[in-house]
Each structure stands twice: as structure tokens, then as C-alpha cells.
Image (tube, rainbow, N blue to C red; front, top):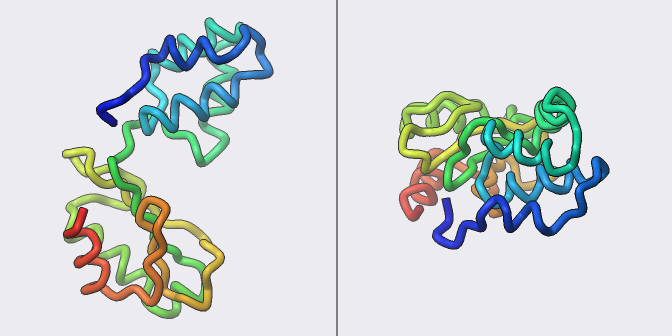
Length: 151
């Protein structure tokens, strides 16, 4: 969590108590806390007046939402056709080995979350790894390890 984390009440106060604000609230809580806890989901539901099952359905439908804690840094390895052919799979395996985490999961210290994606739209730079919002093009295991060591 960031040192300047907003309180959930501050986020809720930004929105009227209407169901159409469900997704916006989920987005803001996800952005602030890196995931949506069961407690926060319940508070959001109470605020906008929707059943918990509806909010849960929305939160599990969209890949941008997580109901489990996410790492401080998100690593997304592209496994689109071009990236896969140029070694994307080996990059994922190196991350799993070096960080001791399986794809789709977060390290125990909550520093990194490792995911794979189907395409990041940067095929000319293949293989590509996104670390937070930064692209690492023509990625190799040594260049990826070096970038992660800086974090």
C-alpha cells in the first residue's frame, strides 16, 4: 500500500449513493489499494445500494479487478504469437523461478504480481514484458532480471 492511501470513506464520498457508480467505485478502490477486499466490496455495495452478488459478479468479470492482494509492482509477460515465438514463455519461467511465484499470483512479500497477457500491441518489440506501466522490449532473461533488481 502507498503511504498516502486514502481511507475508503474518502473514496465513497466522491460518489452519489446510486447503483450506476458501482464500476467507478470499484476502479477507484482497485487503483488505491491494488485490490478490492471483501470489506471494501461490502462497503461499496452498501453505499450504492446493490446486492453483494451483483458487485462480486462485476468484480470477477473484468480482469482489471482483483479480489486478492496485488503486488507493489505488476509484471505482465506478453504471450501473443510473436512474443511467444521469440521467447516469452522462457521469460515467464524465469520470473516464476527467480521470484518464487506462479503466474497469476503475488509474491509472499507483496512486491510483485506475475501475469501473462495475450498481447500488449507491441509486436515489433517482441518479446515484451510490462513492468507496471513501462515496456521492456526485446526482453531477455538478463535484461528482465536487471530491471527487476532496480525495483
